[in-house]
Structure formats: structure tokens, C-alpha cells
Image (tube, rainbow over all chains, first blue to last red; front, side):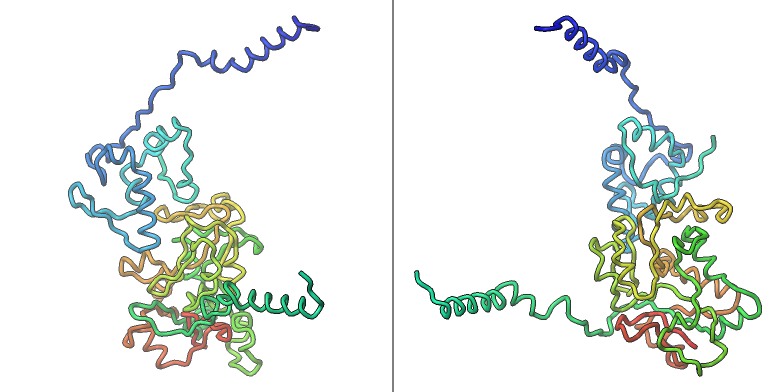
Length: 129
Length: 268
């Protein structure tokens, strides 16, 4: 092999460069997100559905809501938890309680690298800093 | 196989006749979706609007009035982009001659010549925009409202090409990047969404207010200043306000020759 050493050195440097992010971040697992409840949400104790359902299925619920409101003109949701009636609106109902978007929605979405396009149109509540 | 010229032409002729008449060719000629529709009076609520222009003009002559426009655009977060090329409008002013092209003539009541008419989406009974929408982002509700689902709009702008009234606007950019000096508090209504770049928008007759039993924002605004030039109601109810006005006054619609059957009527 001509110039074997040079090639080998180059390969090692290249490989080290390629793997550097892994070495750099080794042992530093990002903390699992802890979405924070706003005082109002804490006080309410219940959401429109049980906590586990909301955690795993809120996107389906919201998708369902937007469909029924916009296309079927059905605007109220009866919670199967306590038969309470909710006005189906992300801006007016969800964010009324969860007014801390940056600490509630964004904490998980950022962790998973999700960019939901809800907020392209829907206005997020103004947060006190 | 030997074919002479005559036999060859015969075979080709029969084959092409079968091709046209058989299968898809035959289906194409069947009556269907592309036929002109016979408009029938539907059951249930049918929202409609009557615009009493003499009242509107009278108010405007005293002092320029755009209460309905301001109210609508504030409630629905429609920004003022200060450029007619990209403007967004749900309800706006149009000169009489441009509102009723072909219908006007120089001997009509001089009081309306060159005057600003209030125009908005006509919520046609036979809406051409709905026919061309490839995603059903715009569709006709059972109560006659030509509704928009901005979640579903892909921004192809077929509807804008189809609408003969120019009632649809396209978001060429992000409406939240509107000039802040013209829109100091945008978004103006925190309870209503804005739109995103690449979405078509238009008047929706305020279904969110109708659901609460309220009148559309523009009608409320006109009532508030006690002009009452915008009259809103149920077309299918013979005793409704709109039907009473339509019975008493002679009204015209925009571009009736197109067969779209608008549900916005004008008293001239």
C-alpha cells in the first residue's frame, strides 16, 4: 500500500471527528421533561380527560376537536370523567388553564424535537416573565 | 393476415367508435357532477344578508364610516398590510360600477354613482370556489355558509381563481409579520386564530358568533351605530327579517348571470 501511514492517520482523524459528538455528550443524558402545571390547572385538578389519556392522546383529542368544531359546528365537549361541558377551543379552553405554554407544552415538545404547527395560527397566551 | 386499404379503414373506424362509446367515453357523456345544477330551495336555516345601501351611503356622506370593516377585521385578526397587491380583506368597499359591472348604466340614481358599496363573500348557493377546492378546505355547510377550514387549505388558490367576486385573499406572508405601525396590537383578538403563510381566507359569516345566538360582527357593528344597513337572517323562514325586507324592497345581487345565486342582496 502506497502512503499507508498517511491514509491510516487520515482515517483515524476522520473517524474521531465523525464520532466526536458521541464522546462529547457521553454520560450526559438529557433530563426527562417535567411539564409544569399553572396554578389554575393545579387548582382545577382534572383536565377534560384523565391525566394518562391526556399525556398520550392529547394530539388525537385536539385533532378531533378541531374537526368537530370547524367542520361539524359542534362546539361543546362533554367530559366522560364528570359530565362537565367544555367549549372546544385550544385558545379559549386549553390555554385558559394551561397558560404557561413555555413550561407546559414546550417542555416535552422541545425534548422530543417536535414543532407542532398549531401555533402558526393559534395565538399563544402572553406569559409573564 | 392480408388487409386491403378498405378493410383497414373499416376496422379502425369500428375500433375508435367503440373506444368513444364504450367505458369511460360513455361515462363522460352521462349526466353528473359537471352539469349545471338546478337550484332548489333547501330545508332548514339558510343564512343571508341584505345590504341597505341608501342607509349606508347616507351615513357615509355625513362622515366616512367603516365600522363594519374595522369590527370584522379586528375580531378575525385580519391585518392591514398597506399594500393593495397583498391586501387581506373579508369585507371591504368597492365602487358601485365595479360592484355591479354590466348592470349599472348612466341613468341609474345619481346618488349611487361612484359611491362605495360594501362587499363581502356572497356565500353563493352554488359556490364555484367549493367546486374547485381539491382538499375540501372550503365547503358549503347545510345552513348555506361557505365555510373555510384553514387547517386543510394547501394554498393552491384555485378558489381565488374561481370566485367571480374577488372575495378571497391569500396570505403571501406570515400575517404576524404585518407592519406594526399599522397594526399596533396584532393579533387583535386573543380568542381567534390568525392565519399562516400560504392560506386563503375570506368572510365566514361568523359561525362562532351564530352558534352563540349572536349576529355576525359586521351586522352588530352597524347596529351599534344605529345605521342598520346590514340585515342578517334566515332565508328559509318566510317571517324572518331578511325575507320581510326582500319582500318589501326591490333587491339585486352581484353578477346574477353567472348562476352562483349569491345570498347577499343589495337595496340600491
